[in-house]
Amino acid sequence: MALLTVTRLFGDMGAREQEILADYFQAWKIDAGTNLFREGDRGDYLAVVVAGRVQILKDDGYGHLTPLTELHSGMALGEMALIDGEPRSATARMIETGTLLVLSAGEFDRMLLDRPVLAFRILRKLAKGLSQKLRQTTGRLVDHISDFPS
Image 1 (cartoon, rainbow, N blue to C red):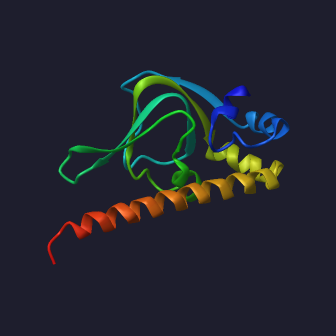
Image 2 (cartoon, rainbow, N blue to C red):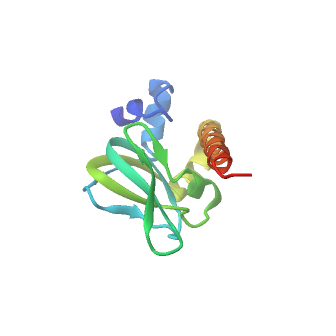
Image 3 (cartoon, rainbow, N blue to C red):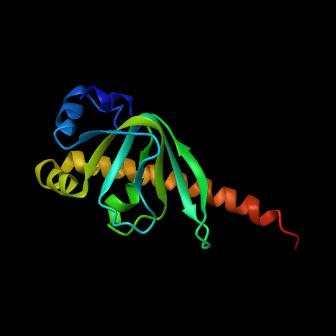
């Protein structure tokens, strides 16, 4: 599947690995304004943005959604839900019509059985990406905290 080559997560894999991975993914075309999932929904898939833009929003506790970030081509979302199966920690909304590559938890489980080495490589890439996001978030939190008077 040529769509895998444009993703940060899978773009560095060889053609044969991408061909194998394509058997586990589905391509979804999503219209602008569509919620991919809402905060608190059951998390059962990972998606990679191939085209379009996705906005990630967080409920502020008063029913208002606060934008956190925007994702564009090559970026992944839903990694945590694929790994831990917990409810979604934020809302994801398409802000531009686009295409996503989707790996369901069931297909990932199948990959773990069929292709454990490949599944491990994906888990490692997901862990690295989540680690980088956590480091960025921690840095922003420290910056935010330091804005408060002592």
